[in-house]
Amino acid sequence: MTIDKDNLALHANQLRKYLKQLLILKEKYSKKDFMENWEVEDQISRKLQVAAECILDTGDLLINGFDLQKPETYADI
Image (tube, rainbow, N blue to C red; front, side, top):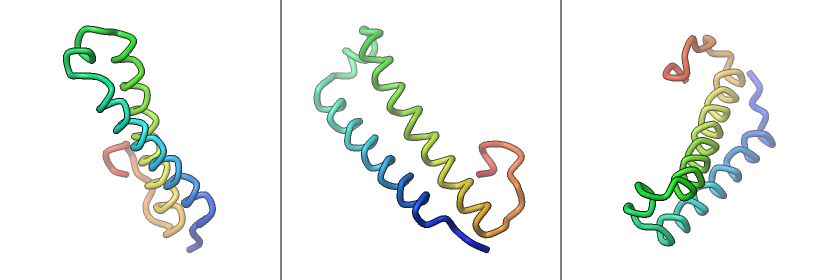
């Protein structure tokens, strides 16, 4: 039962970075901008995607570190 603390810290830092960037984008663009401008939508959607991937990777690290049952789906993480 070993957790890779360095890798876990890396994912936590990456997640903080993406969340800060999303807050900046939230202040920069309105909901209307998001709905009507595909470039804004792509930019925000990509940040949400990488943040979600970071969360899933963190969950996977914890599952492996605690020798828990392998998840069958992302929802299981």
